[in-house]
Length: 142
Image (cartoon, rainbow, N blue to C red; front, side):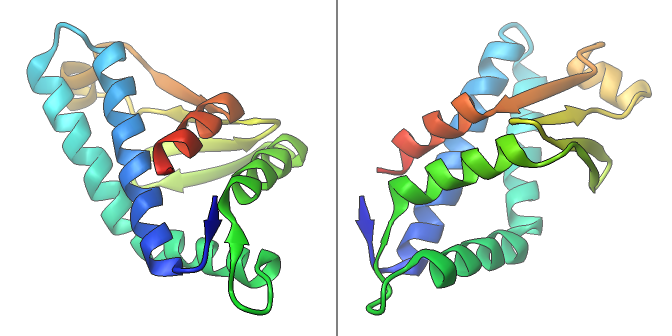
C-alpha cells in the first residue's frame, strides 16, 4: 500500500496494533472477562504512553525509506521491520513493569510476578510476538 500521509499511517498502525493485541488477549484468556478488559486497557495505555516513540520510529522509517514526495510503500516498510527484527541480536528492554527481549525474529514479553499480575494473567508468565504476528498486523493496517 502506498502511503503519503504519515499521520494517517501512524493512526492506522496504532489501531491495528490494538486490534491485534485485543485478539491475542481474547485467545490467551478466553474465560477471564475482567482480566481481558484490564489487559486491553493496559495495551491501550501502553500505546498511548509510548506514542511519542512510536511516532519517532515511523517518522524515521519514512525519512529513510520514502521517496522525494514523501510516499512510502507501507507493506515494504513492515517487511523491512520484520527482516531487521530477524537480524537483531537479543536485547533487553523495559516497557514499564513488563520486561522484553527483542531480537532473533521475536519480541518476548515477561510479565512481572506478584499478587496483582497473578490475579490478572494467572501464571501466564509472558507472551511472544513473532514476525508472523507483525505480518498479521500489516494486514490490519490496510
